[in-house]
Each structure stands twice: as C-alpha cells, then as structure tokens.
Length: 166
Image (cartoon, rainbow, N blue to C red; front, side):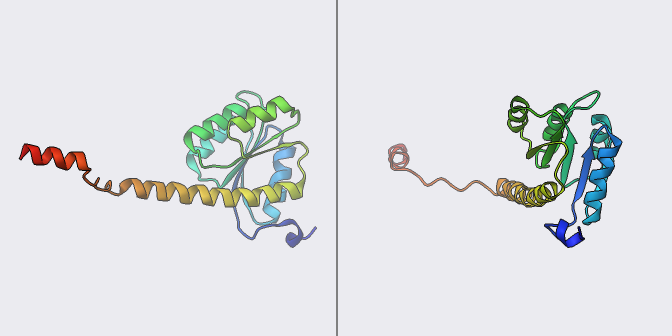
C-alpha cells in the first residue's frame, strides 16, 4: 500500500502506543509512522503514565491486558488527568462484558487484536476530530466561566417590596 492509500488524514498526530509485546508496539509504530504520525512507545502502564505526564498526546492506543496495572487502570488514570484524550483500547481477549466495561469507562474505541490497519487509521482520523471538538468545548467553557454573571432583572415582587420599604 502507498501512503495515500493508508492515510485517511493529512494531519500528523502525536500517538502514544502502550503494549507489553514489543512486536505489536513496533508494528503499530511502523504503520502510524508510515503515514506521518509521531509515535511514542511504552511497554506498560507505569511507563505510559510517566510519558503522559511529560508529553501532550493527541490519542493513546493501549493494550487491555498487561502485567501490572492493566489497560482499564491506565484508562482510569488517563481519564482523571487528561479527560479530553481519546483512548483506543485493543485486546487479544475481548468479550462483551469487557467491551461494555471499557465503554462505560469512557474509552473512545475498542478493537480485537490483531487490529486491522485501515480501521486503526480511520479511527485515528475520527479521534483527531473528536479531540479538536473536545478542546474547543473546553476552551469556550473556560472563557464563558470568566465572564461576569448577567445582571438579574428585578421582578415585580422585588420592586413592590422596595417601594414599601421606601
């Protein structure tokens, strides 16, 4: 496949890939780098947490089953610290219960391993748009909260009480 066949978007994203298997990490890195994305790799949740504290990512692709803290714990850490970051969870042993648990935890997308390359690139494109919308909403929400509250017009009972008191 050529770059134009693989890439559904021209935007370069900063992507965190977390998986305990080096071959999977490197495969995803090679795919994403081939279409111009900047990829940072982590082999476990501890390393991912350190990287997230130091680098601003556009999206995270994390494995569900890892030694130590699993993908759900990492997802919860990400959601607490960076609630706007879209997270894609991949798993070799995905069942309905786990998929529902991940959806309820706020995951952006879930996929069974091995992940289809064109699906992953398409989801990254979608996550970029969602990330942009989330960031804009957070920006405007913060801006609106800085504005003074509008003055409340006097109601008829307030005016009557003020006339009595005068």
